[in-house]
Amino acid sequence: MESRYRLRDNERFQRVRREGRSWSHDLAVLCALSNGLQQSRFGFSVSKRIGGAVVRNKVKRRLREAARARQALVEPGYDLVFIARKPITEAEYQQVDQAVDELLKRSGILRS
Figure 1 (cartoon, one colour):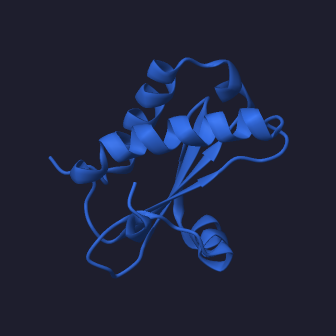
Figure 2 (cartoon, rainbow, N blue to C red; figure 1 turned 45 degrees about the horizontal axis):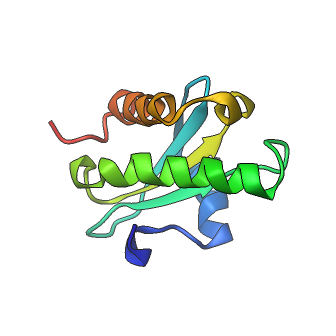
């Protein structure tokens, strides 16, 4: 995913989590907040409670790829933060992909 579509600033992460709307799934939570820009930006949060560095990076890669595959379908102008939940460590990529898809559909952010 290109860096202009990545959300990296901790303050913005906190603002999206605090002020944004959220939707949950067994594997992840999606928080979204309007950003007033021409593109949507994606952020990924994986806590140390999920596992060690290797596990956290694997989870982030899977979430990032699932989001990247739907990037063109997401309405512009949102900051989206995906927060991993513990069961994601045992899920296959297809389950993670399905969870991301379901969260984006429920949020109404996907273009029709």
